Length: 223
Length: 102
Image (cartoon, rainbow over all chains, first blue to last red; front, side):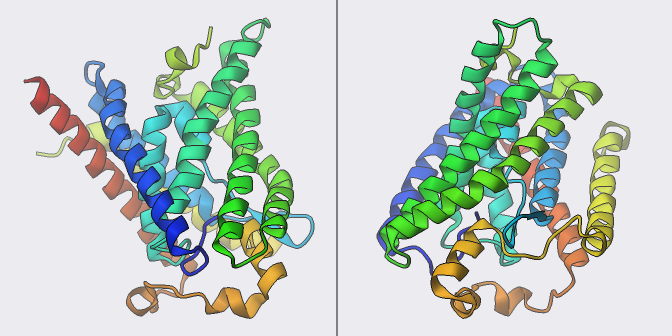
């Protein structure tokens, strides 16, 4: 999912940089809610660790049938833990560091932030929220509801991000748009299963180990 | 003065992540748990344009970090950088927020 340098056209890069930058600036204003609680700055070292976890998970590729591989993107799971705005900022910083190691291009940090942070994080968060509203009608515990919603929401968000990435590549003219959309969506329909499972397991683990790290229960509407 | 007790668990967390990453890389590839195959986007590019095209795409940091060939070292440096950058940014946000409030 990490778009390299040289693949997207300049208009596409500029457009996505502008959108990503606008969302990030908005995010810095919005995410203050996480830190409104007294002594909430104790969360910060854990946020750093969460970033390191996602960075590390993005390093390890699991095999996928058909001669490809997948890895966690993590936008939705971060959004479920810290909120959608923090997710975009964390993804941006992870992408900046990854670009140092050649995983994703420097010029493509904006487009990658849009795909993985804005779509994966913000859109993913609201998909999870819709799923939780639906699951609130069941008798499931809040941990299970959040875990199931995160798994499914992560899957939908990553497939949609791949679909949009296919459009970006197609519009850039490097690969015919029908091929880029179909191929990106097809492969991520399979790869996304891993994203969903890993995201769900991370949320379940945090619920068992340190549930107060899940800061979004209220905004997700978990009952 | 840094309150080390306050950061005990985050520090243990970071060391644990680095250790698990190293073990996953070392063991995962040898038992087939991990894959060196191209990821979804790389697969699409290779299928459409060929492997030479993908390898020929420019990598701006190569002249600076080209010496870094070990996945282990890159992983550890990346984890440390992630933690430092993210903690710094979020502390900055809290600092600005508190200054604005006061």
